[in-house]
Image (spheres, rainbow, N blue to C red):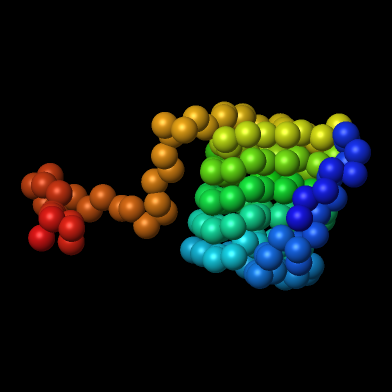
Length: 157
């Protein structure tokens, strides 16, 4: 449950929000990652990340790479490397992104809606998505056969 305590404070409860996955403080996870039921990051996560549910990036945590979220994002920590640029991290969010007073984004941010609290920092580009924008699934890969022809997909066979 998200509770706006005042106009410039964001308070959350990951348990009440039914977030079932967690990367603990001091832990590092990288690679091709997929999470069902949301994700609470208190350590470091890097790579191609897909989250079905809410993503909470805790204060002191860092998330880098290509991230897709089918839910809301709560940024209390670092999105993208501290010295990184917009090309290093790319987050696409189907819901709303909340950037708290301690949240910092150095990457590219795409979201349906964004709320930045007093002190929150967006150092990279921001683009709002509209209803017509659809995000491709991470596993959608086009394979081109020799000769430039695309082989039929399993749906067409």
